[in-house]
Length: 181
Ligand SMILES: Cc1cc2nc3c(=O)[nH]c(=O)nc-3n(C[C@H](O)[C@H](O)[C@H](O)COP(=O)(O)O)c2cc1C
Image (cartoon, rainbow, N blue to C red; front, side, top):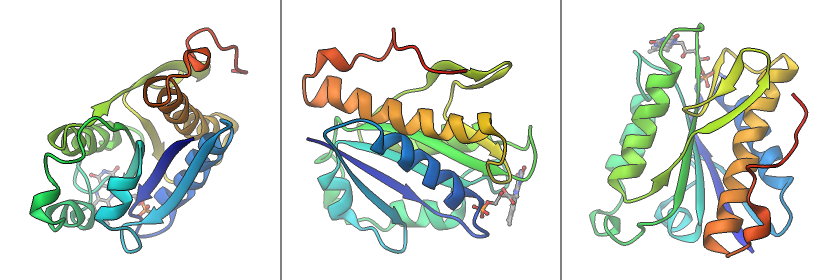
């Protein structure tokens, strides 16, 4: 059974809305257990528990929110170097396209890399000219089908990689999967 944590911070609900669709994608992969938490609800034990982490933050001055950064900064110091090898991915809502959501995703992935996580992007196009190479990014909340699907695809891919690399389910390799654009 793959264990996936969707962990996010959201001030005004947009990243929270993305997180719901990411969780939908996680649930679409069988034999996957989901924990869905805000940074106010989660602690170090949730990180210890998971095999895969989808980490979401609003874009605040071009990077992660200070609250998300604080959450990581205040983890017990002895956690570091004990949770390496988990699979990580990122999502972020910004005020506008080009407002830095991909930079925020990179910043989230840098934190995960610091903890020894294996982070990934997604090569799929979920619609014409719409992809999630560095994580799912959104201007505001997901409204259009492709915006929702980008979030779902991120969660689904995370659960698939957990199935393949953590649980040894080679049949779950997603690269040849045909999904609707
Ligand atoms: C302090 C602060 C800084 C922000 N910086 C940016 C930014 O650099 N680029 C951008 O596009 N939007 C920026 N925004 C807008 C938020 O990223 C945007 O409203 C986002 O959808 C909020 O997500 P949330 O509803 O999950 O909190 C900023 C908002 C705040 C409050």
